Structures are given as structure tokens and as C-alpha cells.
Length: 106
Length: 182
Image (tube, rainbow over all chains, first blue to last red; front, top):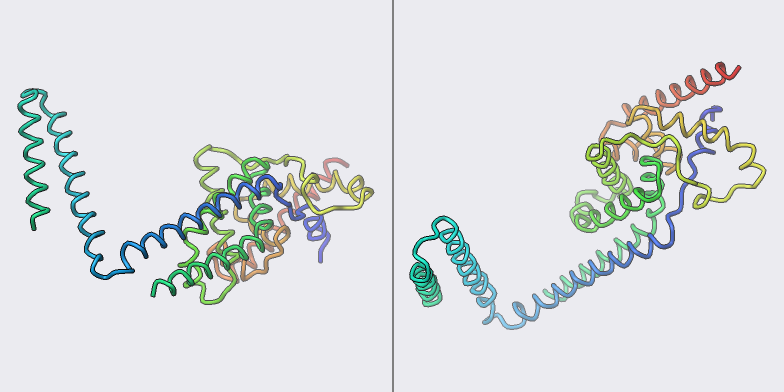
């Protein structure tokens, strides 16, 4: 080992993190692993226990997606033109309800 | 099937805990010598392990049994690079009080070597990024050429040359400083 290597070995000693940091990080990691385990358990209960129920989460996603999409449309239209007031809003809300009925009726 | 999934998840979490315990000090030491202060080194260490947890399963699959320390250090390396890019900072030549956290030295060694250590650390901080990182990995983390090569995304040969040049440059700079002091 050269002289510089010896100096480097003396200067670059490993540094221990503080206990407070380790505790904080371990709490965050535990929360992450706990949340992931909980998610898995919920998914098992709702989807895996009874195969006849497998369609429900999928339907919820479709209906939820449609509703969210419809709300976005309402907001976008309202943002685009202010005219029409209550009548326009009622017409759009009626359209959303009709759209949802059609999707749920399938 | 669900039991198998839960079992896999528990096994992965256990493995990750082991990885965390084995390499927390490595990631922290690397971040500290890269950044130069404890506060930001703590941030980078935390982010490294949180990111590592998210991608652990894939890393484990792709590592094909090789050690994961270079992968962890590469995450810390990328986060440190972002730290400098985002804040337009340069590494600090004067480190926070490392003795408060580092491995114990005999008191007389500390007194005798303090100035020498400061000069070496300042020399390391002034090296080009890739040379500085390679020296931190080699001497603070005791990584071999192959591990350093994987962490830096270079070939083993290129890494060997990089470390050799880094040592020579530092040697030259320390010698020049001695000459100036007379």
C-alpha cells in the first residue's frame, strides 16, 4: 500500500448515521411494508376469496372511471363557456346520469 | 395462490431488511463524503432506501445472485448527482464534524493526524467527480474494483485505470502542497 493509500484509508473512515436518522428511516420503511401488506390482504379479501366477485372490482373501476371522466367533462365545459347557467348545468348533469345508466345497464 | 403471494412478500421484506442493516453505513458514508454535510447525507440515505424498496424485487431478479451493494450505491450516486444539478452546488471541501459519528480512533492519532486528514479530504473533494467517487467507494466502503465498476456503470479495466489515476492525481496535489509549505 502506498503512502497516499494509507492516508486515504485514515481519512475516509466509514461514518455511522445518527440514531435519530436510522429510527426515522426504519419507521418510514415499516409504514411502506405495512401498507403494502394491507393492500395485499384487502385485494385477497375482495377479489380472491370468491371468484364470483371478481367482476366487482373491475366494474367499480369502469364505473368510477366513467363518473370521473364525466365530472371532468362537466368542469371543462363549464370552464369553456359560462353561459347557460342553471339550465346548462342541469342538461350536462342529465347527460352524465344518462351516460352512467347506459354503462351500468350493460 | 394468495398465500404464496403473501409468503413471497414477507420473504422479500425480510431480505430487504437484511440488505438495509448490512449497508446502511455504506450508503450513509458514501452520501456523507459525496455531499460533505450530515443533514443532506441523511436525506440522500433515506431517499436511497425508499427508492431501493420500491424497485427491490426487480433488482433482485436482475442481479442473478450478485451482491446488491453496487446497485444501492448507484442509487445514492444518482441522487447525489441530482442534488448538485438541482442546487448548482459543488462538494464541500470542509466536512461536518466526522469524528462525532465515525469509527473510534485513539486520541493521540486524532491529534497527530487531524491536519493530514483535512488535507487529504480537501484533496479528494477537489478531484473530478468520477475519481472522487471511485476513491470514496474504495477506501470508505472497501469496495473492490468489480463492485465499483458496477456502481459506476464502467468496465472493470476502466475502473482500475480510474482509481490508479485518482490516486496519482491526489499524490501529486499533496506533494505540490507540501512544496508550497516549504
